[in-house]
Length: 350
Image (cartoon, rainbow, N blue to C red; front, side, top):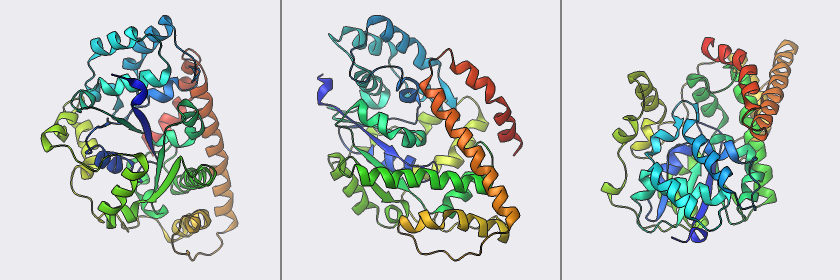
């Protein structure tokens, strides 16, 4: 197999914006390998020089490390059912190999890759990839990216429900929503040939048209796999350790295994009138830039604005720690994990 002919493309976007739904649907196309979420690319993205061939010790380190990674709920390679022996043999048999080639081999030797006839495209997605767009683009100049975004209130309601951020507070969720989507807007304007944005609500209302638009952008065939070539949800759930994990997975992602519909649009609001007004205050400008209707709100009280400012400062620290973590070597990362323990207490108690 000529690895150079296989493309690696990415789905970007803040969690709970439709990234899982989108990659699940695109993965139904023939010749496309689309595995579950994993952070293994980020774990090595800044450690290996993109254009440099890897030596044997670097390959061994990579192969020994990736299967020890479990960075969050449902985010680990055991879900991929990788043929580890075949992966190791193929990685070591290449005359020369770069990190992007290892990315392809990991995907191709997972059960989805092994069951895909004549794979031509690897699709990968993870919300944190969004803020690492520049480095992913350097990894392979031929990669393309789809960024998906969702209305701020629906996204914040969902993130608050599942406690997906360092602090489970609507203002913090709102600030992250702005951060991710402002970044996507900026990069899509800088690199229109590499990054295309789509709106979750438009995908839900007209899935066929929007999926075909994405397939055309990625160069993916519209021919779909047979149903027996697509692993059922039961196969994925069987790799989760406990019944609680399986229930959590199904609550968070189970809907993507059914038809696409508009049921997740305009969810009921759990926030107080004061909180809702402040959420709109934070998100209004970015929301309008994304093409949503203008939002009416009043200027929050000085106390609310101070609170928003405090959450903004915390977000700056969290993002600094996130970027430094992935740019550090694996031994230094132990320090970052120790520093983050107080945040884990916040998450668990929120």
